[in-house]
Image (cartoon, rainbow over all chains, first blue to last red; front, side, top):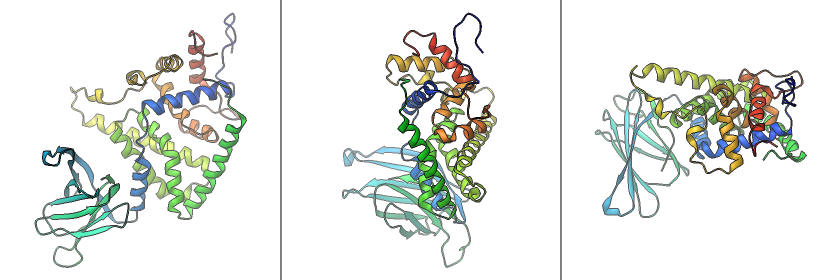
Length: 169
Length: 200
């Protein structure tokens, strides 16, 4: 519809033309710059999808803190807390000199559990002690994810596995 | 900007349609790799869907995670790649609404926490350095209704073979021979035509 006397105006009912396609490309560029998706998000989604068949409780990121460590110059350590229905998992990540990361963890309430760390290389496994403490001395940098499983033997072996969202070491 | 797009671009868009169809077929057969490639391909669009709904970055990530988990549960029901994109956009949009509604419910009535949320429009994000033409376009988009801004932002991230499906998922009218320009793009062109240095 062209209102009389105002020259040809683009109508809403016409098919998209090259000017429209050009505009849409420009709009895409604008939002791509103003609000890009985090580049590692697809990788983290794939990571989570790969775990989908496990009977698990998924922990949520509750808190993340950067702590400057004066003794190590520029190195920083991070603490991250994850909450799930049954468990709180706190981890502290420190840099090793060889470029890997050291991860110290605590479970609350304290309990023995099998702990697996999925990494960009092979998964690592350890167990928490009665105080709920566990540690991975050397973890490759990159995407990682913790899975806290029930202990296979002993009393209190019941309970579901808990997985954290993927994190970047 | 607004230059004539070469025919090869259109051809590559058709090629993408075929590639997505074969990825979907492989994912339905259980290929994690094919599923991963679909995730990489469509997530940037879903990100805009979640952010255009006014979610924070963290909530937008949760919405994407949920959307892809739902897709895996429903892969068996989705038979062609065009339906796939429409399904993903619809699911992400509903999930974004749900998260938004939940947040509003949890806010104390007297607290104005929306300051943290991104604007519907581009107005607050002008730290991006823009040349005049980009600024003109940015400002014209800012004059559109919130609904039009959301719509154009999402359609701009949609591959051409999927326009009709995504337009339908967003409640836009689709013409009998394909997507029409629609009210929002027509309005944008009128705004730009009135700008010096605007639309040619």
